[in-house]
Image 1 (cartoon, each protein chain N blue to C red):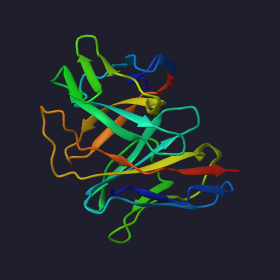
Image 2 (image 1 turned 45 degrees about the vertical axis):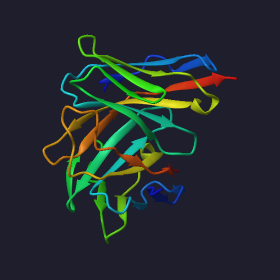
Image 3 (image 1 turned 90 degrees about the vertical axis):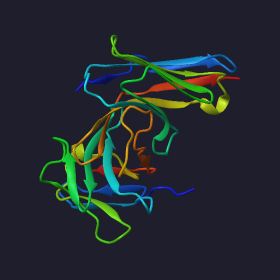
Image 4 (image 1 turned 45 degrees about the horizontal axis):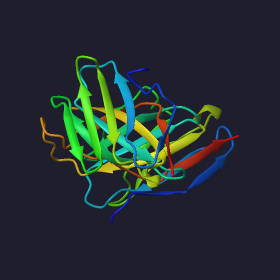
Amino acid sequence: DQQVKQNSPSLSVQEGRISILNCDYTNSMFDYFLWYKKYPAEGPTFLISISSIKDKNEDGRFTVFLNKSAKHLSLHIVPSQPGDSAVYFCAASLISNFGNEKLTFGTGTRLTIIP
Amino acid sequence: EPEVTQTPSHQVTQMGQEVILRCVPISNHLYFYWYRQILGQKVEFLVSFYNNEISEKSEIFDDQFSVERPDGSNFTLKIRSTKLEDSAMYFCASSEGGWFKIGTDSTDTQYFGPGTRLTVL
């Protein structure tokens, strides 16, 4: 099952610079795209989402861009801070008739912010 | 801030034994989920639960698995006869449900617990 792919297993960015994490998907039926952040020994924590009919959503330092024609989304973090060091998961959701959202995750990108 | 809790944090069991993983979702949430992550692999959806019944399940969620909400607060995942390949991190999640705004950026956010590491020997 390769419906959601993150091709970069790791990324290192200098503190204060922009971090760009990328994600590709294959299923055009996804309703929402989400980014989750995960620290060791914790569960994934929701960061930001975007509807499949939008192309940009911004929340503070985090912006998600969606390019539907390329089936590609990206997460921009600016400025990057040491506390942003974590594993970032791209996810896509399908809403069922019962209202539940089944999440399909990518493999994750480990982001390291260098002080 | 309300959070999803899971117990135990680590469970070791022998192959063929039954295990029950426990979760306490956020109190006003209506939708409940189990996901798992085998070491080095993706987080995978197992099952969703709403209104006291399974609303969706994946191919992984076969007859060996069951879920239950035995009271108003707990949500459990039972694996009837564990196999070596069931070794994984199991995450419970919950969400408010009841609404989502199609066309906005507001999904029905799922809040994840810290996970239970299941080791099958």
